[in-house]
Length: 168
Image 1 (cartoon, helix red, strand yellow):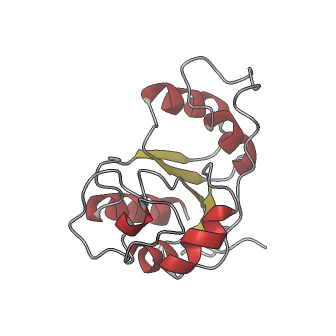
Image 2 (cartoon, rainbow, N blue to C red):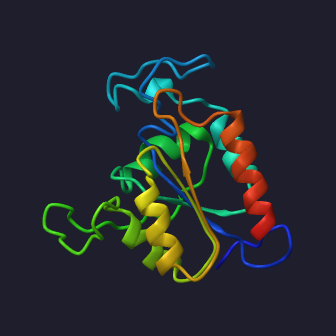
């Protein structure tokens, strides 16, 4: 079942990477989770406010991360998110069909979207990815690169929200 956007149409997909956008690599200036020795060592850097902010966006969020189902088991509960669908990526060591110069996720996300509007939040998006998506995806797409040192910030949420409302 698809979530409906603001206009009553099927909501756009929001493909979410974890490392960089949700778990920044640099220092943080927001409240963080207490460290937990039993999980990812940088997980304490995740902003607990991201869960409600993501849930408020007019989209259908999907994990697009190498964390796979671990994103549902470890990160989603910490953010107050329900379990989300997970993109199943092929083994990148053996996959040779990726377009030259593009991220190994690009082709898979376009196939998963199947023409549906989508935003992709990642810290490794390049102009090559944008060009490939513009040529191979029939629906609207926003490839939004996040600074991995700070993760998702107010400006990122504003840009995502505006774009999602414009297509949803």
